[in-house]
Every structure is written in C-alpha cells, then in structure tokens.
Amino acid sequence: MRWRTEAGVVVGSVVSERHVAEDKRCARIYGARATGFPVHSGPNWIGRDDGTRWNGDRSWSAYDGPVEPQPHPILPPSEGDTWIGVSGTPLPVAEAAAWVVRPDCGGLVLFSGTARDHAPGRPDVTYLEYEAYDEYVVPSLHAVADEARVRWPVLGRVVLLHRTGVVELADSAVVVAVSAPHRPEAFAAARFCIDTLKATAPIWKRERWAGGESWGLCDHELVER
Image 1: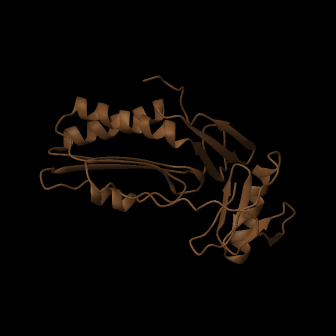
Image 2 (image 1 turned 180 degrees about the horizontal axis):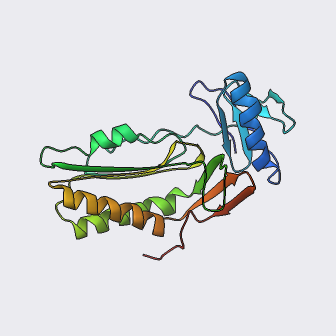
C-alpha cells in the first residue's frame, strides 16, 4: 500500500506488521514534529510529505516505488438531502453544519465526536486509528439515515461522516448533523443517528495509551440490521 501527495510525491512504504504500531508513533515524533512534514500511515506503511519513507530506526530515506492515489476529502452530494462519507482526511465539521441548513428548517443539531486523551482504565491516550471498508460501512450509514427519516419524516438534511486512519487528539472521528423544522425532532434524530451508527457500523478502532494499545470494533457489539 502506498501514498501520493497532490503534487505526485511518493510518501509511502511497506513495513512489517509487527512493528508498525510503534513505528507510527516514532514516525510522528521524529518525522512531522522534528521536521514539519506531515506523516501519513496505513495498516502496513508510513510515509512523509517530503517523498521519504520511514525505516523504523528513527530515520527516513527516499522511496521511488509504485504508489496509489491519495484519499480525497469528503464532499457534499451534488443533489439530495443526505450526505454520507468515509475518509482518511480530516472531516469537514463546519461544512457539514452549513450544508444541513434549509429555509424550511429552524432546528439544526450537530454532533462531532473527537479523540480524547483518556478512556476508562486507559490514561494518557495518544491517538486513535480507524479501519473500515467503504463497501460495508457506506450502506450501513445510509441505512441509519433512512431509518431516521422513517421515524421523523419532517427531517430536512442528514449528514453522517466517519474518519479512517490515524486521528490525533482533539480531531473529529465522526460527525452527525441533522436539520428539521423544529428542535425536538432535530435533537431526537441526531441522538438516534449517532447511537445507531456506533451500534451498527462495521468500523474498527485502535486505541494507543500509556499502557499499550488494542483493536476493537469501535465501542460496541455489532448489531445486524
């Protein structure tokens, strides 16, 4: 798996699965923070925007192997009132809030779930990482939005967005936005959407903290819909 910047600079490299978690942490410390170049990573690779790869020994070297395109930012749909998306790029929180506004809707509720620095029994969380397959997650998110419209037919626009890849502390991992003519329906539908998303979407989360790290199916037991 590889990465390409918009300018076409190769920044990806395959590394061993066993060392990839610690390598990602070191890469961020000795890569982006030391030099100012952003670091990108996936399940088995680490790369930097100056066209180099991570060697696993706190050093970087040039890489000229094959590449894959960079993930694109999530954009709103050209038509319709439902915006669904999964992306390895930062989520457009402000854009989601602006997009759900409609002249016939007086209530707007937005929820943004951000990465925090602790979890139950896990102090000093340093980052989160999410993995998902679009072909499974996107239909799951559409099903949540469809069910919300069945329960509250007056809903205007609905947004369900989720991050993949490494999510730094305070960055948004999930965004839900809903508009409706009145606030009771907007609040209720937004709460339903985030709770149901977390209970049904097949998204895996890695949490790194002071005492170690672990993968899990987000924070829920998967429910068939």
